[in-house]
Length: 378
Image 1 (cartoon, rainbow, N blue to C red):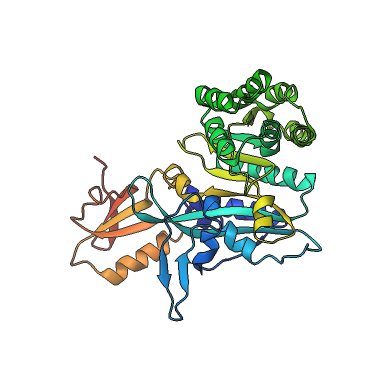
Image 2: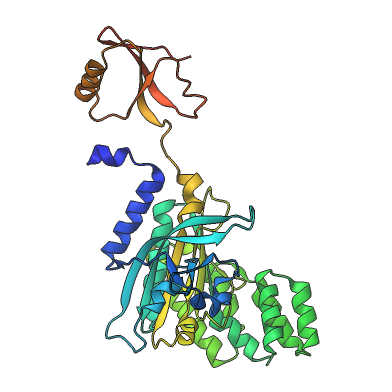
């Protein structure tokens, strides 16, 4: 078994370790189908943040879609009434999305967890703890940015903005665009003190404890106070597990308030230029779908990690054995079985250009006259 594990690439090992982590913490694996009714995505297109969905008609004339999201498929099958116990599940699944770079549809591999049940404080801590452990499993040099939509919506509720203006303001908070934020608030005739608070909130970013102390000065209503208390509980968790230095508080991390509420977060690891983990609480989505439960979870893009974790081995295989077209093939295979049972061996006819094929090996042996001889590397 140990030899088998050694032959796995780093991406495969990470996937196995993440599965083991979620199983250890009492999460059970669920699987969803490749197709869903297109109506499911039409009703929640803002949650998906895309209109580009692959659709087709089945034999009964029903419009179906290749699944662009896993969370919606999981929620769809949750009972509407409150459940006697929380559902703790994880998935390894494929979704189908349009690539903004190539404008081609691609298959994306994801792994993630969902905790569906009462929206108590512990579920927040458990999911954040799992997110931290997941990032650490991928690379011990990681960062997690945490925000709280209750803090943002609480402050914006003081301004009594139209839905259009609030959406525009959220977009600019996400972009940390202070100039446009100020212009929008001027258009809304917001008091000078509120303008100052929103601008401070939008630009607040840094170490969790230091930034939380600054955020405390902005609390001005019950919604913000409740959000602050949740973040203060989070600070205790981060200190207890020694992860405080890896976590930032960043209120520019925002999502659609029609679907999300409470904590939202994004994770990064050294060596990968884009975010690899996204998550948050989406009780509002549950309500929109008629479910009387809260929910929080996160997903990890295995594709984003693909290049970074694609091998972890310096070579594609341990040994290259080249042979002539006239050698005893059965004898050659017998030698490989007897001598290299626990090695990765590639057999190639002499003259094959493995370098051109992009394949590498640690040792090159030549099989001649029933014997193996080492070929000096160039």
